[in-house]
Image 1 (spheres, rainbow, N blue to C red):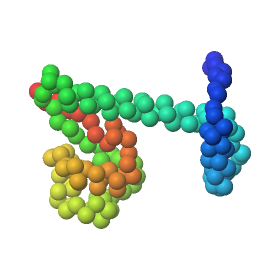
Image 2 (cartoon, helix red, strand yellow):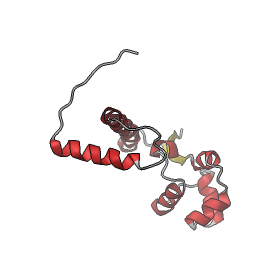
Image 3 (cartoon, rainbow, N blue to C red):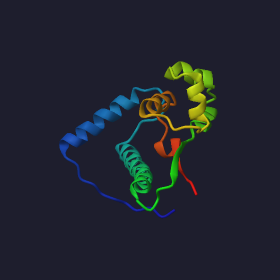
Image 4 (cartoon, rainbow, N blue to C red):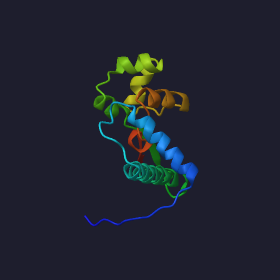
Length: 141
């Protein structure tokens, strides 16, 4: 893979802030090696690019929702699949969300769309998965 070198310039305050964050990160036992400033900046850039990609994906969903040509659609969820990945049972989700098991079952099976309150409770209980992983649009003929 071809690599490109970028040179950046930061203020003394930004440098201090980066070094302070790195110092705090190195106290965490999950980081086995010393973190270099270069590694930190590469990681921060990767996170930023990922955030932009996720925003573009969710923006495309918003584009569909606001586009008058796409009137026949339903918003569906993938909560069931996310639960399966997390090895979570419906009874666990009932306890975490305090949503009635019948209503939760209907939401998980996409029988009806959850209201904002229920959606946020489920989303939080599933540890805030990427919104584009949690919902999708299905066109209705």
